[in-house]
Image 1 (cartoon, rainbow, N blue to C red):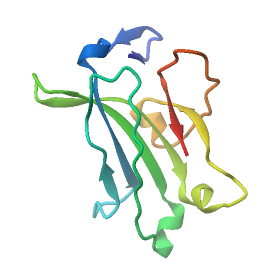
Image 2 (cartoon, rainbow, N blue to C red):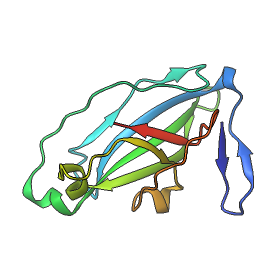
Image 3 (cartoon, helix red, strand yellow):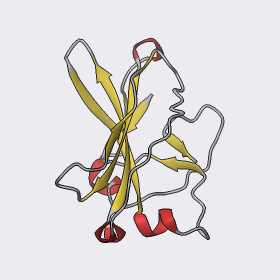
Length: 133
């Protein structure tokens, strides 16, 4: 699993045997943390699958917010989590039936991923993207 650094170089995060990933789904901005979900940690998975459903109630003021999907690597030895990448969709986009969200999307660095999403052109063995359905 790799993360692309700002200087364009790839940094290897962990080998497959040590990969421990989890996802977080949150609404931003949301100071009350009303919408915040976290998957269980997937241990020793080269291509982890998070087949979980989340539900939450939206209120009128949420229409200007973004739903953020973050992927994290959990380091149990150092007892900390490291962000691999994230992406987000506007709530208006999520609720628009004409704009179906289905496919692979690139994981972006935090400052960019909380504001954007980019579809990925999937190649065999590519693990720097996340499938959203």
